[in-house]
Amino acid sequence: MKERGMAMTDNLTEPAGQPGQALELVADSGLSLTSVVCLSIVVVVLLLCYLIADRQWKSLPRAPYYEKWILFWLWYDAFTHLLMEGPFVWISLVETVDTSQNLLAILWKEYGLADTRWLHSDPTIVSLEILTVVLDSGLALLLVYAIVKSRSYRHFVQIVLCVCELYGGWMTFAPEWLTGNVSLNPNNNALHLWLYLTFFNGVWVVIPLLLLYHSWSEMQRVFPNHHAKSGLSRLFNKKK
Image (cartoon, rainbow, N blue to C red):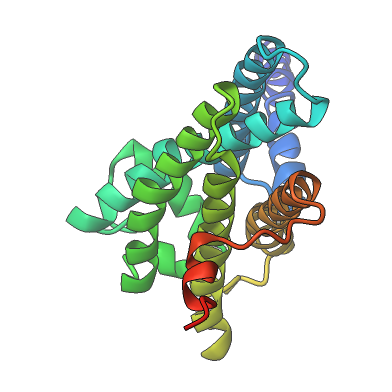
């Protein structure tokens, strides 16, 4: 009976190893439980932004289909700056992400595995993020308003926002490139390199460039052969 009981105990404990095997498979793929949680948060934010953008787009008369995706991007841009980068700025001003026990630091501790500057309140990173949280998020929300209300300053704001995003991306990585990439992907992890660093940061390069092209195309359409001189041009070219 004792041997049978021991056998039954062994049988009960063996299946417990199956979740462990699943976790090992996840670990082998480069994903940790924290990675899964953080990526799940991103997916939820993406879904929320899509629902908001879709509802707004449907309320616009004769709005082109691409406007829905522009609105989607702008909401995601604003939410990322405010809800994700905002806590990073706050934590970095009072302590560091690496030493923080705040739940809001979990996301940045995970990203810090790909870029260690985010763990230790790097002055350049924090300075850029303050501007990003305050200026870029405000511009993104203003641009949403301009699109929904068909304001004339829409493309001016769109151009300014895109230039800010591109400049911020350059100043985030250029100093690191010039100093030998000491802080980037120190663990030589493929997930950190291609998903965290390349994909998530590359999106903030590709989409602003596309939106700049969109604004340029709209200006070309509105002013195809515009040769009229502005008041400033007339002032400087005025015959004496």
